[in-house]
Amino acid sequence: MEEKPEGAEVLFDKAYLFLDTNFATMDDLEKDDFLRRYCLMLNSLNVSFKILMINNNQDMDQVRRDVFIREKDGKFSEMVRSFNKYISDRVLEGHSGLTQVRIFVLSVRKRDVGAARDYFRSIEANLTVNFSKMESALVPMDGTDRLRYLYVFWHMGEGKQLTLTWEQMVRKARDWKDFVAPQHVGYFQDEYEAMDGITLQFANRYSRVLYLPHLPSGVNPEIMNRFLSGDYQCSVTIDAAAIPMDAVRKRLNDLYMQVGRTIEKQQETRNRAGAWSSDVSYEVRRQKSEIEELLDVINDNNERMFYVGVYVVINAPTHKELENNVTAFCSAAEGEGFHFEPVYWEQIEAFHTASPCGARFCNTMYPLLTQPLAAFTPFIVHELYQPGGIAYGVNQISRNILIGDRKTLLNGNGFILGLSGSGKGMETKKEITEIFLTTDDDIIVIDPMNEYEAICDYFRGQFIDFSSTSKHYINPLDTDTLQYMDSRSTFLKDKTNLMLSIFSQIKENSMEPEDNSIIGRVVQQIYRGVGEKNFRTPTLVEFYDILKEQPEVRAQALALSMELFVTGAMNMFSKPTNVNTKNRFTVYGMADIDRSQSGMGIIIMLESVRSRIAENAKKGKCTWVFIDEFHRARRFAA
Image (tube, rainbow, N blue to C red; front, side):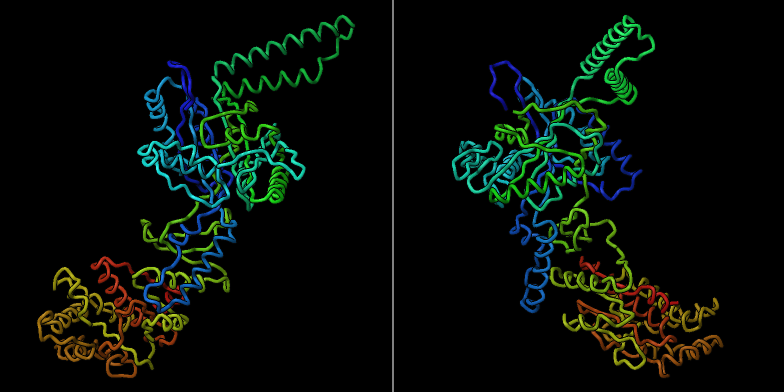
């Protein structure tokens, strides 16, 4: 806030953080639609505003707290260290450990803070809606946030964080500038103590402010991504001031009349010289055409006009590195037609103008319509960074690490797709490992190729081999799901559906309606007394014996059809369960299962998985189910 005489209007500002959105990944039609929405947002602003994008060092200590894996019991410390190194390398290699901050600053002149608050409140609702339409979000800053991001801008590249809060400053009557501003600021002096006038020297770093003296003929909407693609600390500021449209129209009409008078004078001069057929000069005709085009755009497209200044602040720990960074930035900008120049002998003023506050100390600005201004869109790509989540690689556009927590989504399901040999299996095993090390969730893997046996053994899980020669048995008639059912009748209905599915596979879908009734009756008989103290869990052997006792001819046919799977060579599912299906990491190996058993095996396996998920859901525990080579698993079921 400025200090002005009592009763005079004072400059107030309000700052917001805003979220990025996936502009870079849109196709051309989507980008056009997005830019139209962005133009509508700009047209709604009749005040001065700034848009800042800051590339600064990531707080590696915070990254470690957010995403590094912590050892729980020391059993897998080597794996924990390996994964933490992987995450650290991805953070540093991705964008050299830089993080991007987006700030939106509104400023207005009012007589007092109450009037300013009312004004900001009146336009904030509209801004929030417009940002939401662009799949972004506007987050107002409080006093502590303002101090923190002013500190970030003033100490860019130092890797420090401001610990002072707004409440502490007010309670102890401290001047915030003593904590936010650097201790020393001055122009850089060379070994001969000569100042260059274009480089600021802080206590332990160097900075240079560049400005854009004029715009190229065309602006790529992805230009901000190009500006911020370097691996160094920098910020880009778009400083804009809305021009009242009445003043714009009046000025353009005055210019149009001036050009008209110039044309008349030139024509009179040519007529007096006898050059009746000659035309006026090209320069005058071009000026007239441009003014007419501007008037058409303003009147037909509801465009606004702004005064705009573009500033870039580049930082480095040494003067030589600063020169290299400036050269790299200018080369990238010139490749897009932008020719930045340093601000001579007004570096401090330009630095203040580029800062995240409403102050403006440099007036090097040029008029710009809404559409050209919208080309400086500050949106690039949405970052996925959810502390406590899992590392999913590096964003190919921003080159920042992706940390996601699928449990926070409305639908956390997903596919890992890719060409053969592209690393799908490795990515799956990496995700499984991170889940195992960072959570207490249960993990179930359906493994048609038996390639997860090694990782299962490493984490001391339970690998269940589904094959006719296996010594692993799972009893489909186990009663451990009874305690998670609503009632005994629900349990019986569930087991009846299971047996109907099994017989459907055995009989190859040649079931008759009376078969269903017989199976349902047998289920009722084998579970008579279920839930009582001395109840003995049945197996398919008991089911087979009771089925043979039924008087119907169809019952004997059903018993004969299941004989191979009860007393024959394929009796792996007719014995009591002898594996730990409650192990936190369970893998169902399906590679060696006979095709004649595959349908029945899939049903029994899915029943085991389903009951496990239901049990965990009752406990409030998450269950991750991975189906590898799902096309093969589907073929087994078919």
